[in-house]
Length: 284
Ligand code: PAF
Image (cartoon, rainbow, N blue to C red):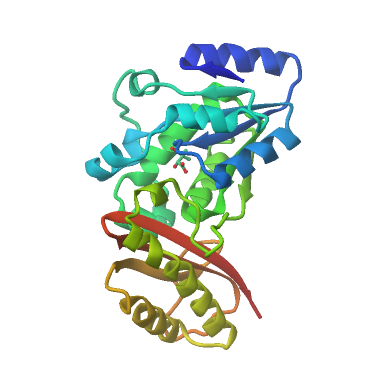
């Protein structure tokens, strides 16, 4: 595995691969790698000739400077983890390399970013779209791999790929969970033992919501029961729990008993750490 730190170095490498007709897979990450990331890299290695994994804690997608400062950074451990995954190039640029000048252009995803993460983290998806489009231009992938844990991010990136005619296929992989159901996340490392002990309640809340919807409960009834379930744990501060159309991510009406593909998404604070999770349910 080669480690590259400059945009020019990565462009030269991908240009050579393209000329040789090699298929390029890209796995964009912010590091502090876990099994969820590694599954994306292994899939990229199976489905492409060469794989670029980027590790870059992108400042422009953090609306909270403290969250950016505390985001786990483990460059040596990450490089070791990637050794046997099929990663060809680890791209690990500095902030100055990715942003030689402040960006002026802004992305606007309309209704798609006026809910959930977009509503609670102003500017977040502008930062995500900016860095992901830079990574697409530098690595020129045929396929790019993302985890379903960031469901709204996946929708935003798919929209961007379609709107800007990026010649690549975005690939989404299911959320990878710990044995107790907690969605794997780089932020889990920051959980205190007490917060880690109650964190699986988030997925249990989504499972409860799924069962209720399968029994034809209304949106308002599910909202009320999920909120009550999480309120039993004072360590959990629910930021939002949305029941939405899985395609548009727009919230469903309170009185409706939903049918079709429904996305259940939540964000919550546990002891100063913000976690998100979601499930997509197929309802008859
Ligand atoms: O999902 C992430 O880790 C980040 O949002 C991404 C896609 C690497 C962009 O910085």
